Image 1 (cartoon, rainbow, N blue to C red):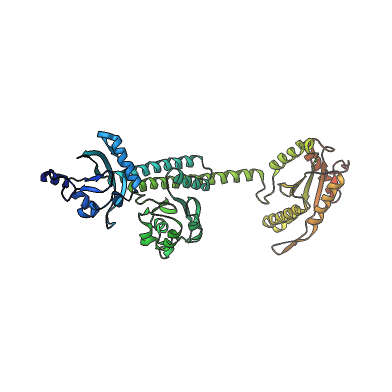
Image 2 (cartoon, rainbow, N blue to C red):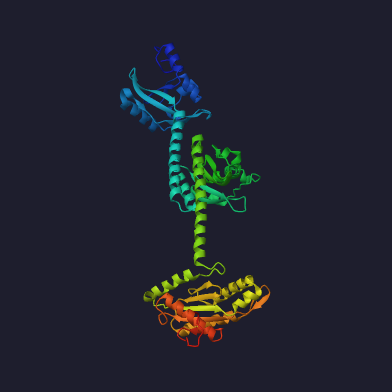
Length: 493
């Protein structure tokens, strides 16, 4: 054998052909795992000289243990003429300057009674990276689909943000996913939702939108104030992320990250932040998908805002339909419904309602002499005083003008209702100041009880209204119970 470990019968031109091959070609002893031959390409790719490689065991070059090497060779034996192709492996050159994925094919041959393994190793780095990129893109497509589904079904921005973060982790294969928005009146970013690793970092650390601050020159701040995606493929070497290097180095194995702004009407309103433990996790295609996701989020936020405005308008319309615009008290419509409900629940709860009609004595004089603005202020103040006397479950309503009605939810006897009426009279009788003027307002109160004075709301309301006129006929600033009506009483037409 010559210095390469082969017989002298190998032709020189055949050696030159092997050396010119773009693939690494090696021959190894089956038993000893020592290289018998390596071509020039192997030397170039690994950075080792031929003598260095011929003095090495296979495991020294591949960084596998002996058992793994033996297992591959046994598979080659079993494969016969077809041999055995191993899974791609990540290998480094001698000085660690070259890094790549290699796929090796093994075939067993017997030469001069000696078992040897022929190895053809081909670099497949581009193929592996392309496959991984395709896999990442597929995952992000799945995350985008899940996010779009969340947009349809989420009932609030907070629910949507969390669903998007969850999708980025569960479907998108990310390490960290977070939604951040600026705190109102501040340049600081606020964590709105998050999934994955690193919560302690994002919750504890300061992140700003101000590029003049170190905390505002990171990926999140830059994406927010530029309105463009911001990506790093080597987080711990990126000068933009220097402020966070110590935290990340101690808590995660973060390799790459991306921050994509959520833009509405040309202005950033938040950012979607993602990180990965893989390098080059955010290529152009992935970033394009993330921009689509951010655009969909912006559209969803606009819909939520429109829905909020519609809901508020609807609530306002309902409020105005059921409440007095001046005092905020229930109006006749709401009072009628509440009284119907109280009567319907008597058989179930045993709680009997009572009604009090209240009219402000001589209120027209205040309006005529001081003006309607003063009159309105008096009505507001008297409504507050009356409410303070009542129990929490009782209802004070304003029918219009100077007419108020009280629904007492649980009255045992007429004496109970009378005690409430006297408290109302005492509260109203205290002087009140309105724009520097003192006013004393008295009340005329009519009382009706269920079921003595009516077994439905119309009857109770009419009985209390009539009783109120009896109280006025008594001389005002007093109460009257339904049934006290006398022929001499002045009743409404």
